[in-house]
Image 1 (cartoon, rainbow, N blue to C red):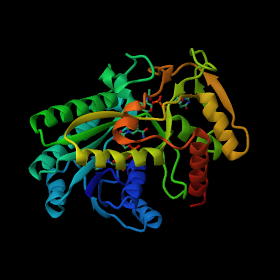
Image 2 (image 1 turned 30 degrees about the vertical axis):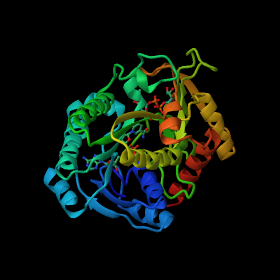
Image 3 (image 1 turned 90 degrees about the horizontal axis):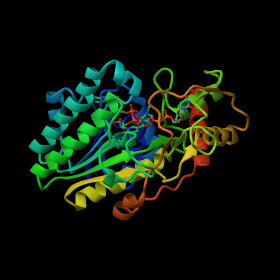
Length: 335
Ligand code: NAD
Ligand code: UD1
């Protein structure tokens, strides 16, 4: 298939482009490089042997985006482009709604105009809010989101569902990612955080590389194995492979499907820290702090639907995730 990948030079997008190319698909990337760089394109080429066609285009620029549709006959779209910082979304909600909603609507309108029927959308476990019991199941539906970022994901899910009802030829897969971490085993692509990382593994990586003194563990009085928060971490390469299956599923079916992508297994903050210590070969300093507002104790996926519909099962364990994150961070320091 010829697939438009919005946000394709970003963290998850770049890994997905590699997997799509390796599965024999043709990839065209649209990205405005707000949170990524052009250099990623050569890295995708080094890994996969193919330099993807690239448009430096903002999805808010509808005319610019239309040019991409006019010049290419797409079979499908994978839509990653968007802003993703939870705290920032609370401070500048309109910017988030504009980029993640208005930008997406431009894309969906052009898909309709150019009769591109197959879509995979990057949603998040954050749409479950804290309304439900773990493991989170797709059938729970949408919970109460706690920040504008989460609300943009929930709104996109609602928009796509309505759009597909009106257009029965459409096929969309809404992937609810749990916590993607790690990097490609080559160490060439991975996550480069913008400023001080909010997320656990990018923060640990910066403690290990000496940019931060210690990890602040947000609370150890939760009802979990060791009192620290538990999450379902998934290797980004597993997540990327799930996109290949999801877009192929979309092309072969009609309607809208919501599918969790996680491992189904939760790890505590301290368990992740210890796995990272094993990867880097030394201890990592940390301090227990107050709970972070808005955090939930435990979050992990029910993965049965992904297995049943997509035949997808995550392969990499937490140790491999930390090993690949460490390998990427080391290479970044050398660059
Ligand atoms: P990322 O920031 O690395 O990638 C997003 C890419 O989109 C970037 O390259 C950025 O430059 C581009 N972009 C942003 N706004 C754009 C615009 N208006 N026009 C064109 N390009 C634009 O983020 P990621 O971690 O790869 O996440 C990809 C998607 O997955 C996002 O939608 C994110 O919300 C979602 N998601 C991510 C996580 C996570 O933990 N990383 C979890 C759940 C969902
Ligand atoms: C966060 C977002 C979520 C988003 C997801 C993307 C919040 C409240 N939620 O989820 O909307 O979809 O990232 O992956 O920001 N932790 C520490 N110290 C740190 C960082 C994190 O102890 O410096 C702990 C957290 O308290 C949590 C766990 O590590 O228990 C994971 O945190 P994080 O990586 O931020 O992910 P989420 O909270 O799951």
